[in-house]
Image 1 (cartoon, rainbow, N blue to C red):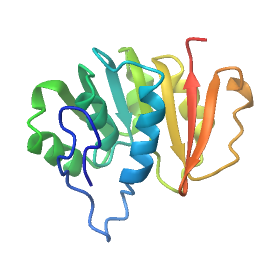
Image 2: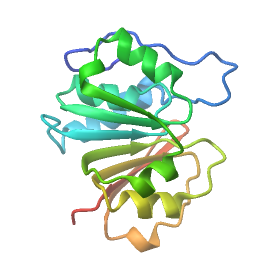
Image 3: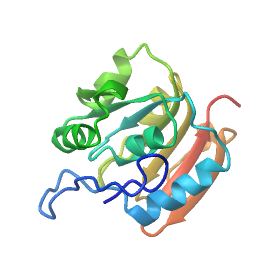
Image 4: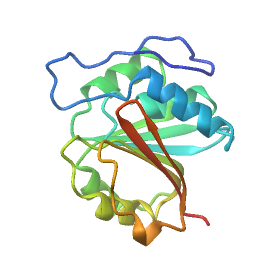
Length: 176
């Protein structure tokens, strides 16, 4: 795995071993497509970001490489994101929180410009997740492997949906 673009572009980051069932990182191809879409819509400079179910931290690290001022990384398994932040010498721009994402979001008092969530394959709690992030994130990208999630409550906030490989991305703007 590598950072796609920005001042860290091309740097290799650690990825999970094939037997690590807790992580399924977003592929380089999917991340490149995702950030090409985002870079035409937003300027990352100074953004506060959050990477939920962060795994390797590749989404938040990509934001920092493109100018975000910092990122919060939340997951119950933090060993790889910690190693990648240390490897890239980004300790001063990152905060790692070892916690259940729902527990963290329920007690969170911070606000973020941009947020990502890439929950595990068998995840079923999309409505609750979106409800919680709607209170603290302006622009949210949900990566999911289920193509037909019921987004009816937030249909007026969905900016777009894209399928890249096996991953589905839903872009939600909570500020509109």
